[in-house]
Image (cartoon, rainbow, N blue to C red; front, side, top):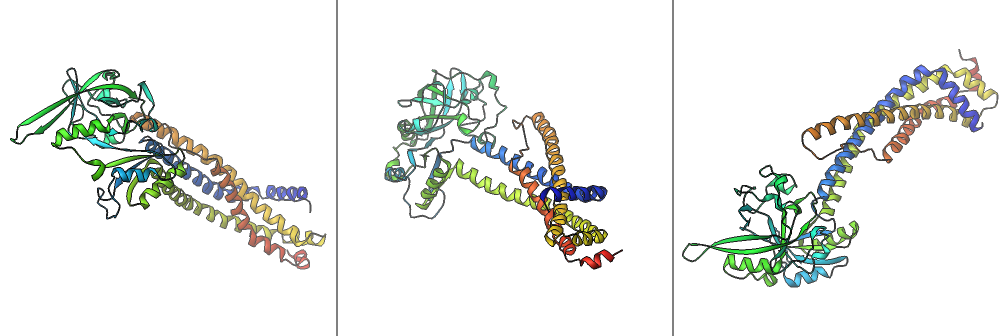
Length: 438
């Protein structure tokens, strides 16, 4: 039997029992639509979550802590100068810099008080940190600093800009603080701001130390924590820490609190470098590793949701099998006639399997269309609600290309699987007995 004859016969048979075909295909429609909607929602959640984590910093930057500082048991030395040189020798590492914070300081500009998270880094490495400057340049040193795009919004007349020198959870996530109006943010480019430190002397009296910082550049907004940071030379931070603590820190021999390792601009290389750093006894964290972990988690979620929705398809398979068995019984004489005029067992098998596959295909096509439409309707309402809540998320639904293709193939396979038993029943019919069947 030629392919053309096979398709013609199958379409004729399906048309004769179209009411039963439609009712049977409805189960496939429901299952396929459920798969498309649920996985599209999971994919949308994955995309928005991963995007928000990518705002935390460059994907090729790895933050390294010594295990001792993280409370771990490790034979690895602290992040001394020798340790940094050792980490810099790892294949795929482009540069490495200490990353020391300066705590307890307050900033002021004219009569305005403000704050920022202050970090000291190696001026020679800053060109590798992918800072995009909206104003000025990224040269730091001798109390010339660069600031994040939102540092200027942290200044106010009463100093109530969120509290001294640190950020709460909202700030860590790159959210906005309503304590100041960002429209009144000052442009710090080229300005000189004052950093004031305090300490207690041996008699318990309070001493202050003021340093004038010149802002040499403003970093383009990333939507993350970096927007609220101020960066200065590690030597400047060391000098200020020495004054505040009353003694100069010996970071090179005792170890820095943390360091930033910059890897090549390749996600796989960044992960390999992260693993190697951890193998050497340090605690390492990168945005890339977080994103990879999130993707793995969401793959599991998508698999679970797809499995739940697939239950409806397996139920639909029972309906297809029932329909095809009834079709075999009703068409027993027809099967006998086909064999009597020369149809082979393979021809009969092909007819019934193709009919079952077509039922799955019809249900799959309709289910995919309804699933995509339903997902988009959900997206419109969800995006409208999120927008009214002040969220920047514009879409909660993502339908990857593989999803409708995979759903189509799955629905056809369900139809084929359900048609195997009825098809073999038809093949096993004896032509003589089939022709006598009433």
